[in-house]
Image: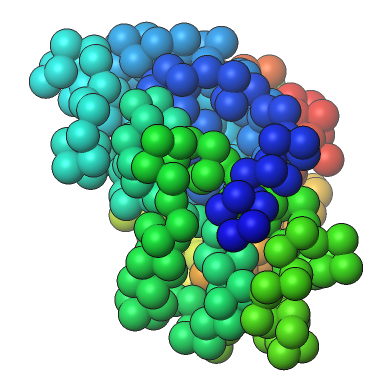
Length: 359
């Protein structure tokens, strides 16, 4: 038996039961693929159900406010995905009357839909004879054919695409692509189950004892460290938040007043920064003697793909409203914070230390 026959035979008896596999609706498939780009299947399933419950059709998503979309997305990270989904939903409604385009070329023109996502929608929803390769597929092919080209290179991507196309059954692309994903998730994992693998007899990496070395990877750049100092001002039962506007992480999400520093600092050192002085509108802290935190919480390192956030939250209870808070931030009842889209980092702080509303 060849590679494809063995793979499909295995899939017939071992395929995973997942909610998005039961539908060939392009909207639902698109939602699942975007969620799963940077999210584990177990976590993604819950978000998938929640997202479709809130936005059951592309029309519902297109009609929603961006903040509403970001709030449902909260906790998944990589919020550009959610913004692109919202933009694409609007495009599908306005340009295609709510019907997903059926060609790879048209799908690729939509925001946030790259080669893999377009191929997945094309294969799973429309039966197009295309390969949809992601990490699992690359890993299987790298080992089966002993491809030593670093996975991140354009040359490697072309090699893997060509190899997959040679094996692709044109009349059953969906099963082939799903089989690659499931086989890579259950058998040909980062720590593979080679001795129970139906492909091991013909697998070059297994025969050459290279499975732990493949796929080859380039050396990653170490993540950048960032230091966030949050000022959690509360006046009676009200706190103050602002929306992130810059093209940076968490754009569009809400957060407490933030001062970012180049290194860890004490609160006294923070008070001496130009940004803190600018925030107060005065050169000295003596004008606001009440600005002494009565609670300081240092969070565990918050790791993102290319950066690590070291955050400290200073809880400061006010006696009077400060001018800069009135001018630049939104007053919010503490009990209503859950209605705003916030980062996972801020959510952890609120949940762990304040039960979300007990500031």
